[in-house]
Amino acid sequence: MIIVAKLAQSTIKYLIEADFTTDGMVERPDIIGAIFGQTEGLLGQDLDLRELQKTGRIGRIDVDIKNEGGKTFGKITIPSSLDSSETSLIAASMETIERVGPCSAKIIVASVEDVRVMKREFLMERAKDILKQLIEKSMPTTALTEKIRETVRTAQIKEYNGLPCGEDVPFSDEVIIVEGRADVLNLLKNGIKNAIAIGGAVVPQAMINMTKEKVSILFVDGDHSGDIIIKEMAQLTDVDYIAKAPEGKEVEELTNKEIFKALRERTSIEQYRIEPKTKELKEFITKDRSEIQPSSEV
Image 1 (spheres, helix red, strand yellow):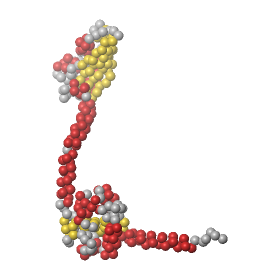
Image 2 (tube, helix red, strand yellow):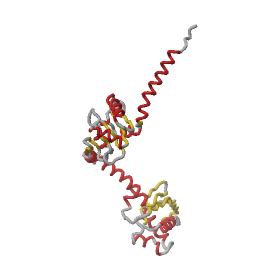
Image 3 (spheres, rainbow, N blue to C red):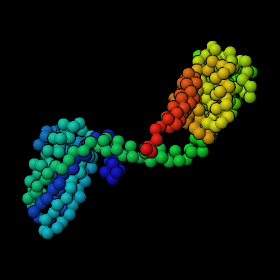
Image 4 (tube, one colour):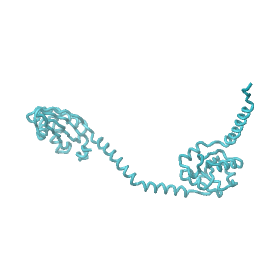
């Protein structure tokens, strides 16, 4: 973060960082002078540090200096807008410096960092913070948007032969038959547009006719009334599949996950008709066996 802030020029591409030590006490101007003086003419006129700094292709050379135990050590930072090969040559030239003022010196390049990568990392972190703030501030708007979407979906409720339904019912080859208008509305909220309601206690003739023409899934509440509707529809219509809401729940109150889970776990009408008979047969066999079980008494 700090390094990026120092590099105000948008043209900066690389950052050279070098560590130095000297065997005596020196000051910052001594180090700067050694850098310019001992690299002059080394790489030719095109890569002369003074000229590069005048044209802005090399930024301000920064020196972090510390004196301890009669010696001086620290870090040299050089921003560069040259290409990667030229920047590498400038970095390598730092290691040719052998003296700073009257003292012997050693400079080792620690790294050459791509500032653009550093900036991208900074931008990513900052963008995360901004997005988080934006989401937090826009929560009411998000809720309002969802409410509008639900209103639009529920406005799509239509009628087919006098029965409340989703807009796709007249054109769809498959329909989902539910008990009432509220069930249709809930399915619409969850993106299901091919639901149609029975609309009363008596199965209408239009519903009977529809099951003969379309693949039909009867989707009922998970209670006793749902079982009654299944029996009635199984007798009067050609419904193909049965789907039930979880035990004790109504279709109109189901969540998106619960709706699609119930529809995935639907059973065929044939299986529905067979299951009670199979259950009765098992119970009869179990009872019969218990009655004819030989006594263990002698």
